[in-house]
Length: 360
Image 1 (cartoon, rainbow, N blue to C red):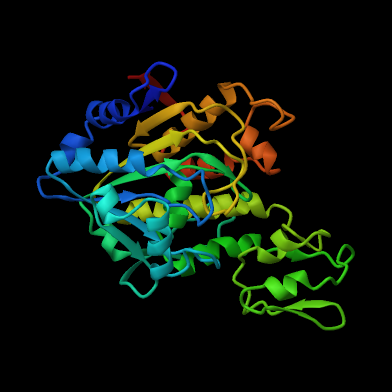
Image 2 (cartoon, rainbow, N blue to C red; image 1 turned 90 degrees about the vertical axis):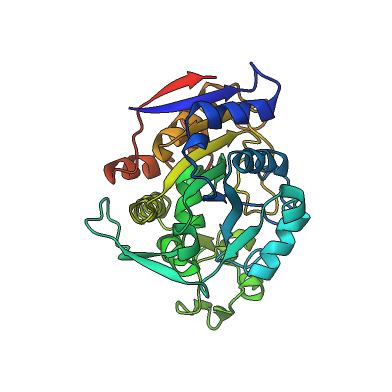
């Protein structure tokens, strides 16, 4: 049973002191080798999003790592869908706009894409219907002596919620691997509902959709970004039955593959605040559904995510945000069971859903 440390916002007002105590009391900060490289893995927010992890918290982690003799750098990978983060140049510009730069944070920012050296990790003995054969991981991340995964806990349209497992599954792999995961949830054409408005044809970023005796899609050009579904007002595109749960299964395998390849020390810090319905990758992610809760730390990605979800279920719902209650409020919002990713990850020995929580 893994230990999860909890800094409760209701019991402490000094957030920086809370973050410091989490890293010190966990023993993680003392395990950083002198002059050791420390990758701080995080999502720096889509352009227009206001609910991503605040730079204030990240710079505090950077400062503590540097005080202990480590060499931190912020890390993420480019997005696999169109937007303000689908190239290195665009991501660095978006990061700077959102408050993340070497000058403001105190550490360099490294954004990886598929042009960088990748390490291929084979997947053996998959479970729960996963057909992912391999995962490609940026070598620069595997070369780090330590990793601190900073995750903003929030809802996600496909996965139910995003936390530490999703941070690794989608943020620590190649664009190719991201798309292979998303392919299992490729929107399905619903001809009966389609009114042939042509909106999806105009907005498809790869030109994969055309109007020809109805709608048709070039499956080779399609990158499973979901733009067609998000822009459709008639339910002409829908998520395939069971695809949300299967995506979570693939996510768990990608995380397991990454952790199998990474040989350094890794810690997970979940920020259970700004708990909105949609991901940091959305321009508009919605309003918080429960009050800010606190920060968790563990060396177990599954335990820290499960503890985050449990704390959300124990929190009062903000009036007029959702019409139902626990369990799994975020999963219910998106018509899925968001524990699938954690249960599969446990089968793959990523971590455990049972934990011991200690407040600091």
